[in-house]
Length: 248
Image (cartoon, rainbow, N blue to C red; front, side):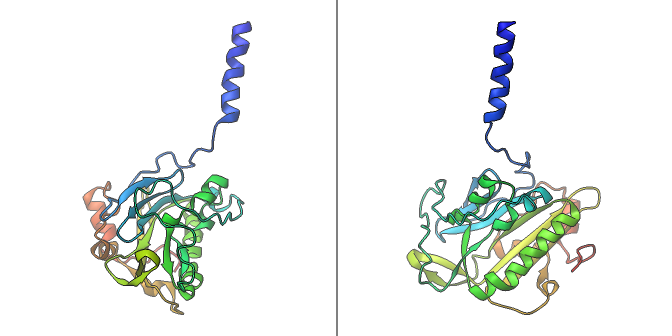
């Protein structure tokens, strides 16, 4: 009996001390294939860091209603990503540049818990964005993606700068992208996919005017999105712009 008690104490003790675990256990499902960078897997999202441009070519994650509605407040703890092997970016690198530290994986998408929120403030998750873009049309697109994730009970999201179109550099050679992309994918029996490309500038246009095919994003970035999909499904979803069912 004594040993049985020790057994239960050990088991339940381990359970109460267990660290936060990802809400998505298959976080690498449909992970894009890196083109210019190398993969870094954080607990709640993945990214491909490009040392040459000192930012990531994509951030990728599964966005759930639980993550959106988690209630965790912003931490604003901008800092170097310890997983970056070379050319890391410090929290003050954008100071005086005139550009925002623009999130690729938005903080508001990771309100699940403290770990998820804090991970979004790694500087590897930042890209130079104009204020009118980051706080304007880009923020509107991020809001729309969260609404779509709630309506669809979860979406895969891929987002990043298009590093083949650059608009100069800031401190220490951080590339300023001219354009950014975002992709949302709903899998299941009736899969659907939508992509957007936006200039790094303010705009008053409707979100649907920025919709493009995923094939176009792949041509611009050199990335292969959702390579694990069957070719027939991938070609159908990625080859055309289909706004049906997206409430745009």
